[in-house]
Amino acid sequence: VGTVRHLLFAVGVSSFVLAFDAPLAPAGQQLFAIHQVQHLLMRLLGPMLIALAYPWTVLRAGLPTRWRRVLRDWGNRRSVSVLARLLTRLGVSFVLLIASLYFWQVPALHNAVLAIPALSLLAHLSMALSGLVFFAVVFDRRDTPQGAIHSLRILALVGVILSNILLGALTTLKTVTLYTGYGIAALRWGLTPLADETIGGYTIWGPSSMVIIAAIILVFNGWN
Image 1 (tube, rainbow, N blue to C red):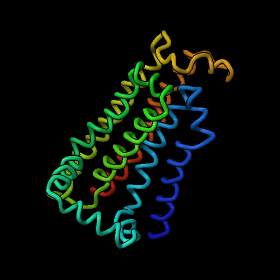
Image 2: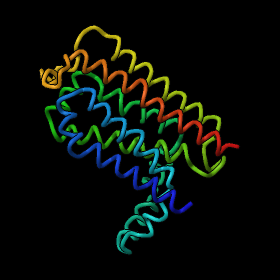
Image 3: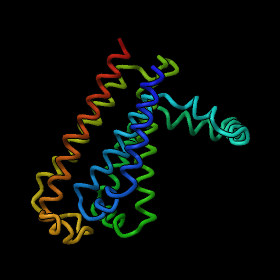
Image 4: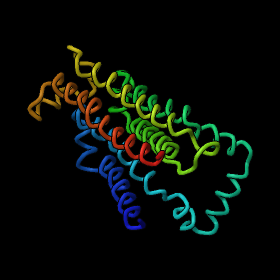
């Protein structure tokens, strides 16, 4: 079991590294489709695998004593405790996960992300953190009342699939180019800008939903 958890954590971290580093990151600045692969890795696959590894206790124990003390002091603050309880509610984490994608897919914001490195980092960190919080709640080993009701966890995952289908369909079936920040870079890859966005829409629609289907199976197995 320990070896499996180590493997899950290693692959999850590797997903983040792949999403944030070359060659995927530079390609994501040129192709909308590759950018959506980045989102898939940093928002869904990486967080899901890391949450499945349940690394929180080990990571905390591995920190220097000074950092553990700082975390304990911060955790004892009422405001931090209230915020943590709020963010780890299933409904709140679900909304944050959906919003982290939909918000940054607004064409004007998405184009701005391509042009401003600091905004790109903010967008990607918000996706990664929302994914980690959501999957930590979904895969929480505790039953109610400490953890969320298992049927609601599955319902939330189904909601994520529906959101993927909706956004993917809207991106795939449109007939105009919306994400002009990529310019004509797609032509160097043998694609028209519209074809590039269509492939990106299918990425949101298909592979992203397959990751969530795997999560549904795992939650249902844990429920039983």
